[in-house]
Image 1 (spheres, rainbow, N blue to C red):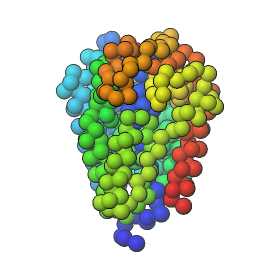
Image 2: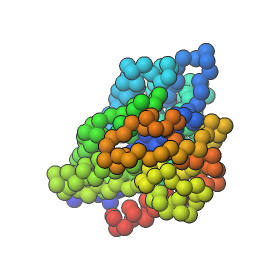
Image 3: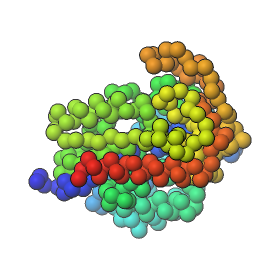
Length: 328
């Protein structure tokens, strides 16, 4: 066994668009007060203590993302401001700093954590105050597996949605390189069991290629998992899917958000939308704005909090089962 963290440790990484994939800028993003021209994001990582080397890298990534958003004009005219807190690699301090971000700094949402114990402590405080903390499925999976939880990768490849306000896309090569660099760093620390939980369908082929290349380069198996949407529709949903593999801002994702953060969901703006399917959607990169005004494809109007609870239970059970079988 190589030096570092034991290889029996499982690391869980969530790849998504602000965690639960895009339950739509269109009707879930919080509307800042007109007099305030900024969105405040609390960023909490261990920038001192045992996890500091990893926390600093994560912090730089988030700050770079914020700089990129602001360079493009912000989000619908609002500047994004990151407010940094240091958990000092200690859950109790992380919880205290999370509370400070919420009660004193008045942030709109929180990202960060790095390690499983830090995430648990921070997210419990955020839940208490009703402030979004984006790591729901991966958090529960890590808890049940006693795994190390890494921060969510909140920016991804969303070329089809790039023309909707608030959308920020990175290149597929950028995402693949990021995943490979993270996995290489973990491997150097002695971690050889890495599970990536993905909630954005276009990521899937990118993750597969990254996994194959890491296997050839380092001989490690990087597991990538996505929730079983077909099974979820069969067991939970009342609506039908718009088309094939596409799940976007409809009954499933809206139900998830109603369960996790009901205060952010504006159901009065939910629109049932089943536009004609472009004949070349399986063969070309089609801009969704050419056929959908809202970006929501399906029927979010039938979403409920209870459905969201069931969906997340199914997703967590599925991910835990896959990881246990892969790394037994």
